[in-house]
Length: 229
Ligand SMILES: N[C@@H](CCC(=O)N[C@@H](CS)C(=O)NCC(=O)O)C(=O)O
Image (cartoon, rainbow, N blue to C red; front, side, top):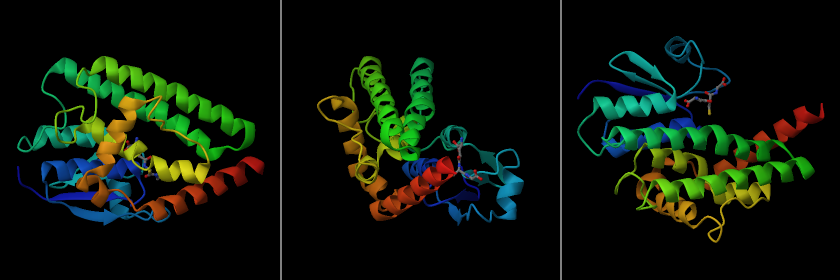
């Protein structure tokens, strides 16, 4: 499938990053437009009038928004190259289920750790560990082959989601002073995340640790400032 492909993204957006990973897994050539989220392009606002957010993929002039919707579109449109979702409907359902859990439950819990301090941060940290426990058991139960790759031997949709959320866990832990991934408690999830982060594709796509650290510190100080106001 040919056609012009343009991705509107932002360097630090985990949502944009998972779409970039998916495009690269498929070997799709694309143009990239870096958005300044404080001064969005007129195209972004036109292409995503509902949410005004990145990422937006524009394929031959047709805009698609929402990272998980975009990745499914990519998989269905470019049939060549590795599959991002399994073919079997039940396996696809499991991928969507765990992608939803990672985004809505684990990521939200991790974000609460960024925004809090003291006892509130401790409570938020416990919540992250509850979610990680569920993920560990769920992945072990749902995938007899376990990690590292849930979808075979190349990154699939679920791998891109995990990589975008947990790929920078070491730097998150350092900045926040909270341990997330413990190989003793979560061996499956830890080996999965470690294997993904080691892939050249992940290394070339995910933002450098020092930039992630700077952004986390900025987000954290903003959130704590507004909580105190
Ligand atoms: N559910 C969306 C979330 C996208 C999202 O939150 N994007 C953020 C950047 S990480 C954004 O564009 N924020 C701009 C704004 O809120 O104005 C997805 O999966 O693509």
